[in-house]
Length: 373
Image (cartoon, rainbow, N blue to C red):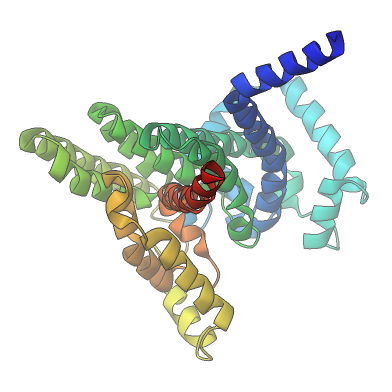
């Protein structure tokens, strides 16, 4: 009897705390999988050394344009490196040198895969910076997942399944897009998109406007956030307040972007490469695979169904998909879908909401049959 009571009490506790358990399992999955995401990010990025696009060039401000214009992570990294004790930097550098020399280690394998003849000086001379930048990017990545979850809770309080799925899908969706193309300003893009959408949802307009300036310092695609405010605010904010904040956001975009561009005007390269469109035309003359077409149809269905039931902010984000695709065709390379990271948090939430709804609809007839029986 005592064993039976213990089992019943345990099951009762599990039932009463099942939401916490599900969220705990989701958190464990996100944290565990995030390390795999970082490995994909390191391999797909320029962190292992690629001359004028390397980590050292970004930190020194000598990288090619437009990379050098995205200065948020380099500035944070340089500040942290500047206040770090020499002993800490030397200790970390010594450890990483050992890992690189050991071809059996994960880092040694990744470096040898990219550079069979040996680690390039762009990496070996900035090993401590390599660690610092990865930590910064990891924090931005986890912040992005956290605010996707916060948005799910706020937007869909009646769909607990969305609150569990959203952070899991948020982290699952990254590796396919960063395995070949990744840069140190990508994860901050994801973070600002999720965080500032949440801030706007809370009607914290001053913080949103200041956040746009900070997001611009990371990447000029903060214009998507301004567009979100312009469209959503038109419907929900007093006209005077909407105009004042929109004007301030536009001024911040011009001042921050203009200042950074002028400061690094001597760097080589063109602002927003124009070879992207050429690359798409040349490499896509043979059309595209049937799998791409089927994936596109599935995406349209997943994002487009129940359009009117989606919150206004998510509708505004989804409406920007055609313009984001156009920017990818003109400025991005083939398979470089990371240029659409700004839309990721909102699209994930829309997809999770529709999946949860469809699953619920499928379960209702089964429940009715069970009750009748």
